[in-house]
Image 1 (cartoon, rainbow, N blue to C red):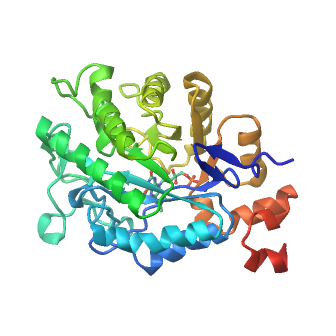
Image 2: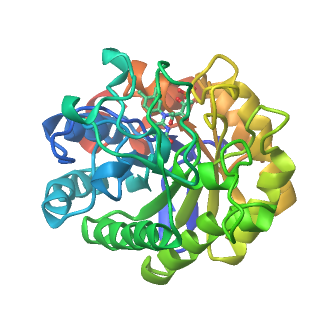
Length: 362
Ligand SMILES: Cc1cc2nc3c(=O)[nH]c(=O)nc-3n(C[C@H](O)[C@H](O)[C@H](O)COP(=O)(O)O)c2cc1C
């Protein structure tokens, strides 16, 4: 019997299988509003049979968008636009999830296919913030903008925006909430010593650097219903000797678990130019990190990184390295990846695809 296609229940939410669509920015929104593109992008992967669909990094504040074309959830109009998408996903058997985040010093960038460099304000960019005032790159290089070093008031303002975004996510019909704590964006940039050089209670020791992430998770858990799963995506390694390693992240996972986080989405990288990219060629190294977090911090995990084959995904779940596998680029190549994986593994596709498809081609 396939473990990949066995259901999983976390709190009151049951996922029909262990296959999830990893959050993927589409760089296709206007004023933070989703449109038909997002509905088809996410909806087609629900029809394709994945059990969990996580919407892209969705900004809690306008200046928290990675690019001006990123989706936001800082107002009610955005909630209204997101709601038909969650309804569709759920109607066809998948769990709608959302990743909420703030891009910190990496915000205000051009879309990848426009070069990905920081945009001046007169080009549609915006002022950026971070734990300190060091830019991601050097002057004249891609992410050159100087962030404003956040005051404690700024920290509280952003944390409150996360809380409001969690409430709005619930109103929009999401059943799994993921906090973006990875890839060098704001929460991760506080945690990693590669970026955070503060000397107040939000910097210095591991505990102090973890404070921004932990307080945010704690405040979100107060408003995100107890019966719905809460996830955090971590960069489980900075891939840099001066940065965070797996043991720091095991500690973070333990702290998050105590605060009511149910599952850790185990990505890596992205903090600085010296640390590997989260979509680079060696992302498959992340699977082992998910397994280590799961066994050592004793918390559920999602594994992500170059998962492309049905048998590979089956092995990850069957060997208990993770509870869910997330796929990003493989899902771009094939929105019906889950349906095809079921065929490969000899699973009845009627349990995977909606009846409109399964009745005829099961
Ligand atoms: C087009 C694209 C957009 C992405 N956007 C996000 C995002 O919004 N949030 C995030 O945490 N990761 C994002 N990622 C990273 C993926 O979620 C995933 O972790 C990474 O691509 C590795 O998985 P893969 O090997 O299956 O592609 C993105 C990746 C791609 C290819």
